[in-house]
Length: 233
Ligand code: NAD
Image 1 (cartoon, protein in one colour):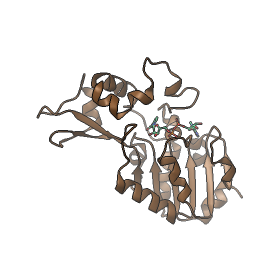
Image 2 (cartoon, rainbow, N blue to C red):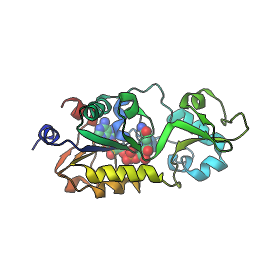
Image 3 (tube, helix red, strand yellow):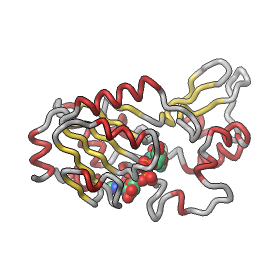
Image 4 (cartoon, rainbow, N blue to C red):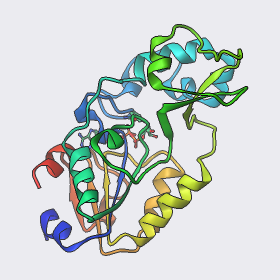
């Protein structure tokens, strides 16, 4: 059965994606050959994006974060656009994403569970005031609120817990889905990667350039670019 036929048959599709969904928008992922983990840093990206590092090396954290994690000019690609279209047509229940770039919303998707938060929300740790990603990108050094408090991106750093409501919403959608499309993720970041185990529907589809631990259990595996695959449907 082809992906086109499966999609035609289903109307409770859930899309579970990762960094590979945004590489065709020019944002590097972590684990591909040209991903951030292959670039040379004195400290590993995993350390720099940890909660401990944020509080102990705030200035260095923000240097890396502004440089690599705030691609504000990036535009949605064919994958983001197709998913927004399916939602409008009533075929797609939700997008569950590990991405923090906000590109699904920029493409028009409304029900998006951002498991790892978003660069577009930033909060003063002292008074709770909210700041935009543009505010963080424009500033220099450690961003501070008028009240003097430290501003932190609402991004789930390594060592931090996922938001309960977001997890409940994501898992609930996956359980109700008749089709789950997993794409652009190495499925190595837990607990997020484990949520695909909750799928009980008809078709499990994987679209990922490289192999993943889920390949052997899918109804359809496409080792292709997700933007090209969805864009061609
Ligand atoms: P990952 O880097 O571990 O894996 C990405 C996977 O996507 C790889 O297996 C790769 O083969 C595949 N891939 C790359 N481009 C693709 C394409 N065009 N089509 C299909 N497959 C493609 O990413 P992950 O599993 O999401 O885990 C990394 C963590 O890093 C996530 O938690 C995420 O929050 C974060 N992250 C987010 C962004 C973003 O927001 N855009 C970017 C980098 C990392």
